[in-house]
Amino acid sequence: MDFETSDSDIRNVEKITQLVRKADYAKALRLTQELKRKHRTKAIYQIREAVLIGDQEADDPKLMAKNKKTAAKILAKFIKHADKFDEDTRSLLMNEYFWFSEKPRDQYGLGQRLVETGNLKGFYSQGVGAAFYAYLMMKKGQVSQSQKWASIAEKAGLLVCLQSGF
Image (tube, rainbow, N blue to C red; front, side, top):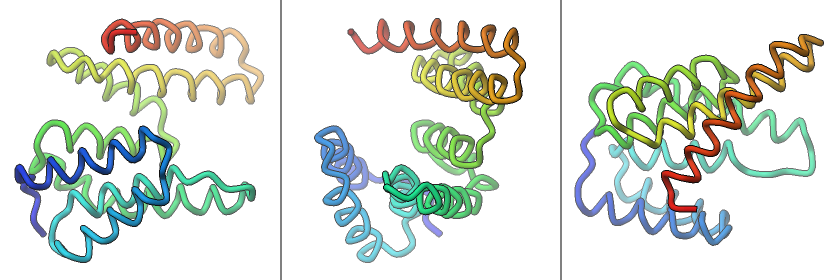
């Protein structure tokens, strides 16, 4: 397995990202799968494909849950090799793995570690992890914990907006 990310890979990932930003998920997935076929040993394309599969919207909640489980299973193969990736790929891998595996506290902790090292993208992981944890606490009837984590998510969300120029 090839864990390196070349300049060409970075350009290809940027093309995928632009398609996602335009909400053209089907085209992004097709491009990712084409790149994965061309570069069979490149982990970056397998990771990107897993993320696109997991993020697919579906009218059927069971299908959405299945897609998330599939994504988590694919990403789990790479977690033990996380230290072999560049920082951007590693943080994407871990953030998405925690999201699809429904491990919001781990996702929040990842965000904390990223911010501590100066990577402000960690505010996103903090916000998403805290928001999902707030939701889980509310489902369990733990209102005060839910409110605490919702407040944490809100602060992280504001920092994401400030960091990204909104």
